[in-house]
Image: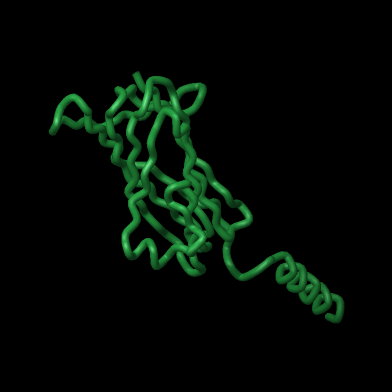
Amino acid sequence: MKHNLLFVFAVALCLVSCSENDEPQYTPQISVSHLIVWHEDAEQAHDTLKVYSTNDGYVTDTISVGDTVRFAVACDALTNQLKSLETRTDANVLAFTIFLTSQHNQALEATSDAEKGLLYFKPGYRYAAFEMQYVAQKSGSANVSFTVSTTSKFSPATLSFRQPVR
């Protein structure tokens, strides 16, 4: 009986000591949706931009210089908390903009710099969505990447695609 009680105590101690904290650990999720392109040469013409999976990663339809692509980016920390969202692209090819509302500004730290694509979240936020756009500046190809960091040990998560411009 003494050995059984000692065994149960040892197992319980191991289970409790394995947990770093009470927060479950999940890989953060990031998604990009509703890629709509407005063509420079037609005032009201717009199309849905398609994204294809290739051996080299995700690639979108080709756009032309002057075209504007608007889309939504969603970050989900699940049960963890958001820490940051970093957006990167080649500024020589694409001019990038993140649209922030007053609600976003309440959720973001003062050190955030939307013009540089760096958003830092105040503690307590698990989900955020942003409207963004880029304008094709010159011909070429630019990688667009989004990295979300959370309090999870499985953080960060990155989503990227290549945008060809003619």
